[in-house]
Amino acid sequence: MKGVIFEIRRFTVHDGPGIRTTVFMKGCPLSCWWCHNPEGQFPQPEPWTRTEKLDGKVFEKQMIIGQEWIASDLMTEILKDRVFFDESGGGVTFSGGEPLMQPAFLMEILSLCHKHGIHTAVDTSGFSPTEDLMKIA
Image (cartoon, rainbow, N blue to C red; front, side):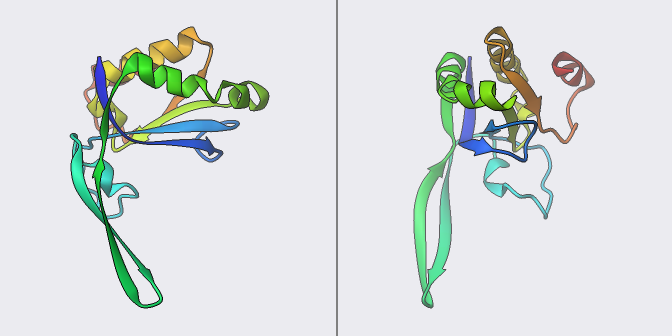
C-alpha cells in the first residue's frame, strides 16, 4: 500500500506525549484560510515555490511537495527514532493535510506501529466518514 507524505519531522514535542516523529500526509478536503500546512492540501505530489527574503532580496526555491511511500519503508524510517520514543514515552503523530484522506494507508501504518509497540496519535479535523474515524479510534 502506498501513501503520499510531504514531510517527516523528527523530535517534535508538541504533537503528543514525549518525543515524537510527526508524519505529514498529503490531502485535505477543507481549504481553511488559516491552514498551517497549505502545501498539504492537494492529495498528490505537486510543484511548489517557496519564497524567502534576505537583505531585501527575494529568493524562490522550486520543489516537489509530496512523495509516495510504501508503508513498510515508512515504518523503517519511523523505527530510526525508536530510542527517543522509548526513553521519553513518545511515539508517532500522523498529521497533514488530513491523514484520513488516505484511510487505508493510515490504517496500515498505524497497525505496523502498534505491532512494534509504538504509541500513535492522529491529528485530524474529523472531516471524514464515520466508519474511517471508528477504525482509528
